[in-house]
Image (cartoon, rainbow, N blue to C red; front, side):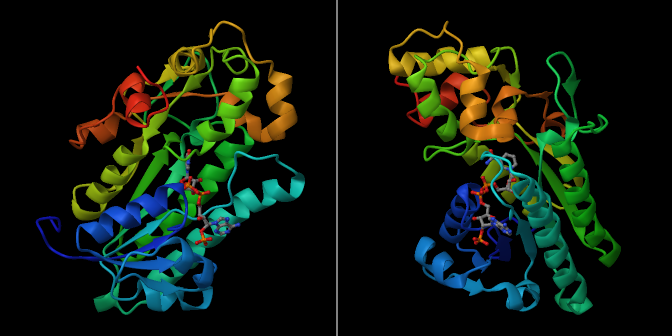
Length: 310
Ligand SMILES: NC(=O)c1ccc[n+]([C@@H]2O[C@H](COP(=O)([O-])OP(=O)(O)OC[C@H]3O[C@@H](n4cnc5c(N)ncnc54)[C@H](OP(=O)(O)O)[C@@H]3O)[C@@H](O)[C@H]2O)c1
């Protein structure tokens, strides 16, 4: 185990994002050396101001990866927005492209300076959507666009195995964080429409508190027993209606009036499928690996994030 107080060098793509920024803060606070692999060093420096960080632009990723103990790959064009044809291409190509770039950089490193582990993001969209099925890590992939994106994204990451690197894929659910993410995009619509469920309310939301995701990534980095696919979702997924009644408490509004699908579609276009359609995903391998969720319960997570008051 590399964890016991040892100070590690970790390279992170997507470090400026919702998940990456928190991961970088925690790794830096624990005394690890963090290398930020970014598209734009200027704006990354402005966003991430912890002392000791090193920044590497697109032409310097190979140098950023060489000699690092581990790499965390979180880069990708945001998906909870209006999907045009161009954006759909960017959603896939940004993920596969960034992952391929980081894997090529890992492979190019001399064997004695090659990172030992790659922790790479994927998403629960891998499984497709269903109101009735329950998915675990060994369930088959779905047939829709996001499932196809996830398969290509994961395949690009798994390429690092051929260079003897331990690869961990985290299939991430909807990340709950105080400053937004998908939930932040939902909240304004939710407020306009008096706090009812979005869409039918029956769709499953497999969610994870950002602190759990960051802890899980850190464990996957430092504990060599982690290898392969892990669902990064809390063990108690909820239907959208449950999430909305918890949120309704915060707003002091009833949660029985459904928000029409067309309202969300108008706002988000096809990207609304992230919250209109869902899947029930269980973190079976994650719990079997010994990960203990700090936030298993949606009420606790929302209270912690101060998204609900009681
Ligand atoms: N948040 C969720 O609910 C959720 C759910 C499931 C899966 N995930 C996955 O987990 C990862 C991290 O999520 P997040 O919410 O932290 O993402 P995010 O806030 O959208 O940040 C992703 C980062 O990726 C980089 N990026 C953005 N557009 C890009 C493009 N076109 N090409 C290459 N890089 C680009 C940016 O970093 P630089 O500008 O520094 O390059 C950005 O800070 C993502 O891959 C996401 O798909 C997230």
